[in-house]
Length: 379
Image (cartoon, rainbow, N blue to C red; front, side, top):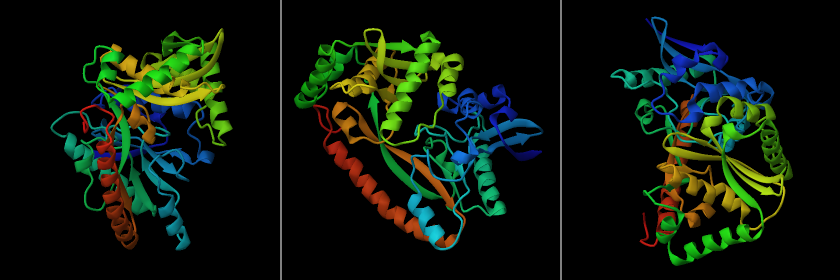
């Protein structure tokens, strides 16, 4: 008996059953990470988030799952559909709530259709996609969006779904022995610039270190969150992640967390926070109270690259956007999302627009590769 059920929170789904469906240890898709967001006040209906997670059950046993949210706005998604919402609402229709298959506040590529690794996995992924689409049609929702999909997810989305791509910058580890060996692969100008930026930080007198999350004290976690929050406030943005969530990361996921820290004497003045799997380092949150030349690049990029080399990680994904990453050894990769717009006419119009957008994205990525920072050109 195959059945689709929707859940109002991760607490309704046993952690062991959810995590058994993951095919890698990407921490953002873990039960612990998603549950932590809900339990610490980051997922709130007044902020536009309502958990509506999907499970596929066979005779009561969970065989497929997807992180799912009813969204009252498009904040915290990083695949922007504001123009679609505006057009739909100008036509006198309600775009929100919509359905979102994604990890909140986290533009991290990875599987969004948890189906294990069995001969049935492809069929289960298709069942998850069909259940999302059926819910939108039955509930009269405008749309369903699945963001930052893994390649294994893509075949499950049929012709009703619109294809959208974008570009992120990831650092590939080519079995470098150390940071200096990595530098030798860059062209002279980029290599010189990185050495200059690192020297600026060295001359500042700050003490820079990389720490495991579970080695940090409660006071350190409070300070890390304060730096994160103040940086958002200084830019007039909303810091969606609560202090309780940062405390939760340290207590429940500390072994998956890394922090690069800059100290002025005994005072922590800047930090960059990362999550980590067995293969990848994920750059996430930055905070700083002082304007020190080169410090952002040191904490957010160079410390991460050194950590990835030291621990044999295959890649470093520092987050969304930022052409400045190209000059520091990060290369453009394509990210994937799929979108179901319930109205056929609206869907056709957006499909045409996305075809034009895809041409520009593809040309943009190739242009970036033509300006590769590596000495041998395109990589």
